[in-house]
Image 1 (cartoon, rainbow, N blue to C red):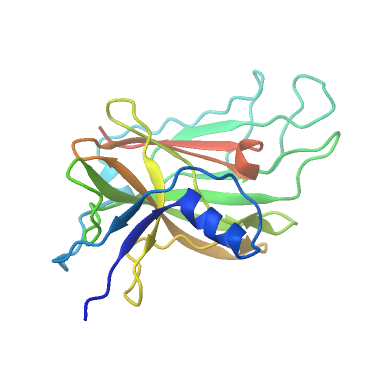
Image 2 (cartoon, one colour):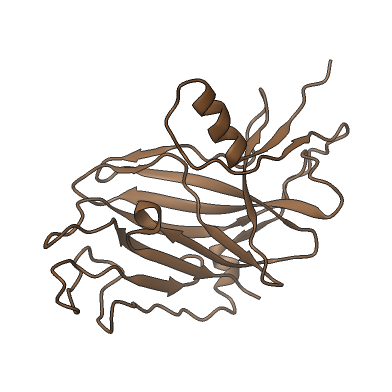
Length: 230
């Protein structure tokens, strides 16, 4: 008897959760792909931070209405004098770590923050049939809680841009009883706790990952942008 493997988009996972009385979330179109009947067991090729560092040049900046903020600090200026700390964007390459603070309040910073590091890429991921024109890859990310409040992300995600300008379609992999090749668990990190996740994306067969972007507080807090080697 064969055990099937499925590729399920986040919209389908959210829909199932809602049907069972789970928490709310944005509903998007769902795609289900049956597992290949003759999936190989070869180890996926991995691109690590060490490999990307060979040619990539670090580009670490902060954008906060003209102000500066350290990627290693939770302190944010209020350069526009609107009563709230600035929200900033940091840019770099795989291997770089940024402290991303959550959405600020009026005259007070967020107590939620995480140190986020993009570790590299994995894939193409075999054993899942996404059709003849697409493939599955994973973005490996490490999160460490550094705020006074629990860093809570029920489904870590982000935007992956690939060569050609297209965006990858984030998916959740369901592998039955087998080990998940790209596991992306929910995060509830207290200060000092660390978790590694793998965010799976379906991208065109000929495309290569170009830029990964992750925003705290669903994009309303700080943002980290990592550019992969061409």
